[in-house]
Image (cartoon, rainbow, N blue to C red; front, side, top):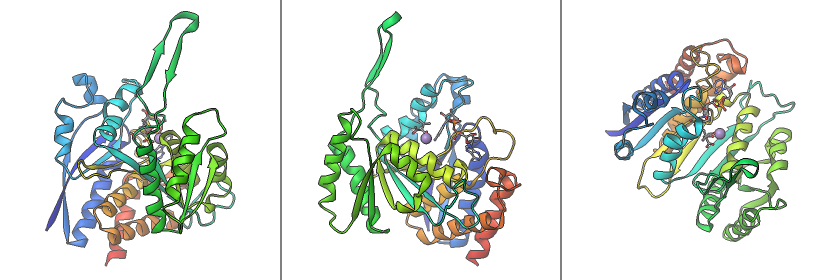
Length: 354
Ligand code: NAD
Ligand code: IPM
Ligand code: MN
């Protein structure tokens, strides 16, 4: 029987609360399916680890992770003890970069019974393909001058290879969905990067005559996520635009605590990493009220990644059952604890699977 060796990094804050129940969900799915197994190996790499060891992970940490077939991560960041730029660049971004996880897939959809802040949420179902390796997230630049002329310079790096790769991924995904790709641009701004992005988009689009396309400036696009999200199918966005859009994606589903993500390595050299869109939520950590759906839907994305789409679909349906029946945490209008909300999903899954 196929056994998947998964590295588990609960990380910080609510990552430590939502990862354990999500692992139980994965275990349940594997047990009921019967055709595969997971072997989970947990690593304590986090801000607490940094406080003790002066680094986010041991020197051979990446070497160790490299041997796994997937990485299941909660969240990283505890700005009270370690500045975010140190902890995030030291672990999360490091893994994304070193393991060439160049694509970040982030869906958002309407569930029946969802308490969305939208007036008319209707049936939106979209996926943001976020370029995950370059763009605005570049290490080029720095602080220069002192005194009155003090400044920070940040260079954005857009390569044809990186932009095109994300766009092709989006077009391929659209083929399997409703055949529509939206480009998140800002070519009216005074950037060199966005007219270039548009040009690459137009070149890629020429290879996909059956796919409909459009493009919106990111500011307008962000507003359309709120006013008419149902016009979108697949959206391709640069690293920072995709980051911001996908928190909005979470918000229109009712809570960022629902939104999942998958950081995909395309060349097969390194494991992909599965982590929800939300962070460590220090404001609610320790209260057992964190919504586990983001982490559990992320587990579903890992199932899809390994080819168990049917099990993944059942799991998403089980999440939908929970939302519909109100067996959910308080951020989306329920009263359950993290644990109870996860148990409800496990029970729904069992009912659907049997
Ligand atoms: P956040 O996503 O942690 O929290 C934003 C808001 O959403 C908070 O009010 C929080 O309580 C709420 N929230 C988030 N997840 C929730 C859940 N599952 N259930 C219910 N409510 C939830 O973002 P932030 O406050 O900007 O960042 C906190 C820390 O997390 C920072 O250190 C940040 O850098 C880090 N962060 C890490 C990741 C990651 O590891 N992937 C992602 C985003 C932020
Ligand atoms: C995310 C997070 C990260 C990002 C941060 C924590 C570095 O916001 O995964 O969305 O900006 O990519
Ligand atoms: Mn983010």
